[in-house]
Image (cartoon, rainbow over all chains, first blue to last red; front, side):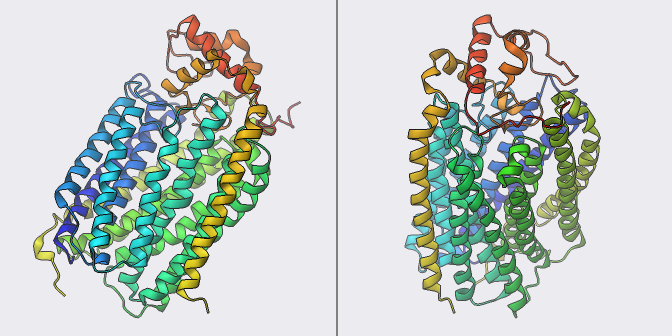
Length: 444
Length: 141
């Protein structure tokens, strides 16, 4: 690392690792419940497990993005972070809000709106937290020596993500309008501004790992985030097909959703092309695997599987079934989980000075988690298609269909075990790096 | 060949144009379509109370409504038409976990009044025009 204050990033990454491991526990609870083993029902009912599983995902990804920003911005702006103390305070408040929310979910304290379950009073704390974070980043950036495109795109993504949280905090009596604005948060996050964050981090990693000229990489970064917004903003329409807000969205959503894979294809081709073009071969093979991996898996999970599910004629049948879970798992894994794991893999040796660049454990972690997640996606897909056919075409009762497809959850849980093994190995490597140290400072 | 400033214009221009179109379409939908399609005149205080109970207990954490939620329990958009008031109230007021086909629901043990509110909410949901969702099972004999 080049700046002492970058060390803050380590603690955000550590929080991410902790929350990720908890997320997996709740995933297993749901997997077993789907197989018929719901022994924990009275303690952790399915709706609790579900809210905890998805919210932990969001919080560990956000913590990862924040850590990434605290690592990247000083280096890009050539300036120490504006306030390290505030950054630590922000980390602690993030952890506290997360813990209160998750404990609350076990005691029926929530706001039952998918992905936005955090109760209203805690929402205000989230706002304060995010404003503090943005304040630190923006002051650092504007007091810095340089304002690079990579830093600007990353910051723009973070600012818009904060703004878009607000429509989700308004109460609407009408369920259709409620749902309409809920997607302003959820969709415009994951298929809009989060992709700016992802693009910013990816561009930083490619500049560092491949050694290709910054101007070339940043030019293509603009093209890709441009494609993302052009397709993604009107692509929100695919959530509006069947929720009572009009027919126009079937046309608009259908067309622009079909364009959404282009942005991800662009990202994949871009990463591979830069890797091949690059003359510098950075020794951190593990970070390279995650960086190329995120570009490719996000194209398959978010791009292709998303397309398969958002064609209106298909979505009429697959909307609200396990097919959504199939797409959701590979999309979040490929686009967001893997980019966070990529930046952590890149940053850790630089923060701690221990150069675990090419270890067997690190590579196994990459392959086991990826193959495990692909297996889970296939299991969800098979279960989902069977569900769609039996329930929506043949007209069997929901409960009878669920019994028919239980067996696929055995495969799902087996693949999830493989995935979890991979994640455990990743966390083992994380711990083995040790703490960040001033001895790792590189003077130029 | 594309220059960096052209790429930047493409990004900013594309974003502004699509966002403007998105806002215009949103405005039209919310002001013209939603009131008609959701029969807003039937959105009584009781329906709103039902929605509050629905959210306070995270029903979406297991069920879907308008196809949105979790996939552990049945889709409820048309449940009023499918099961009728008596059945829904029995499930909501049960003091032991309701489990018609083995899968357990949380035993909410709602009062008669609360159950009526949720029923009113589900009845209202069932009457909204969702462009044909959920589809009719066309292979059913």
